[in-house]
Length: 93
Image (cartoon, rainbow, N blue to C red; front, side, top):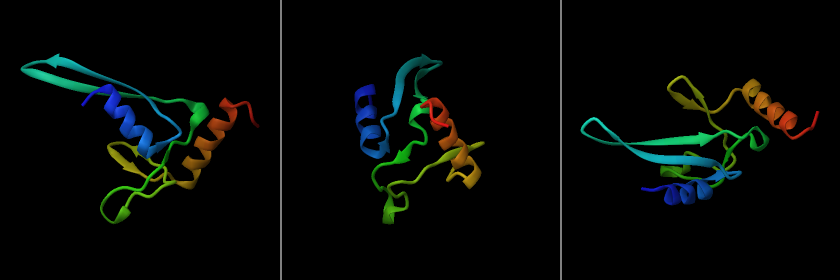
């Protein structure tokens, strides 16, 4: 795995384009990879661009948020907050 391959995968399955930083670091007795997703308010909310998974359990257009260690679809209030943040970042009321 490398930065280029991750960018290709993300470009295929997420929209709009997500900027990320991938790095492999030496740690203890081996190596560990870090993946940083750069959050850009002007692009919120990020959505699934292409369905994936057995029986297409993740479908295009879905949005996910993190709740602690869980990744779930946002509540209506969370989705509205993301859209409001994008509007403010893009200079819209």
